[in-house]
Length: 119
Image 1 (cartoon, one colour):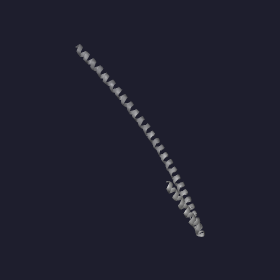
Image 2 (cartoon, rainbow, N blue to C red):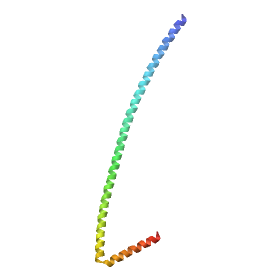
Image 3 (cartoon, rainbow, N blue to C red):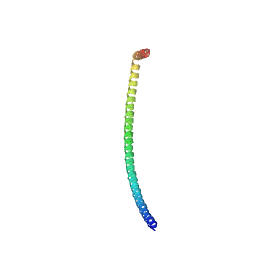
Image 4 (tube, one colour):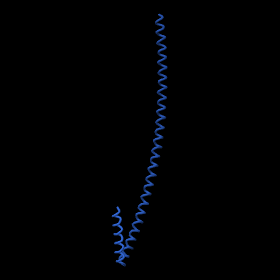
């Protein structure tokens, strides 16, 4: 009879312990769920701000590159205009003074020959 009483008290204690463990596990699961949700929110906000920063950086670099390209085109246009004017001026000078054109061509050839010997 004593064994029967002890056995039932042990099963009651064991039942309480199981219920306590279930409650503790439920609390742990709830905490993990809340931590996971908080972490997901942080990652999402960090990812969106990171994406925003990357997008801003890309836009800035694109704008800078476009500005440099526009300036390069402007410079090229100015250079082409100057080259065209200088070619016209040289052509006019050579037509007026053919001997001067020959002398300039000879001088340029001489300088190129000297630089070729040194190189």
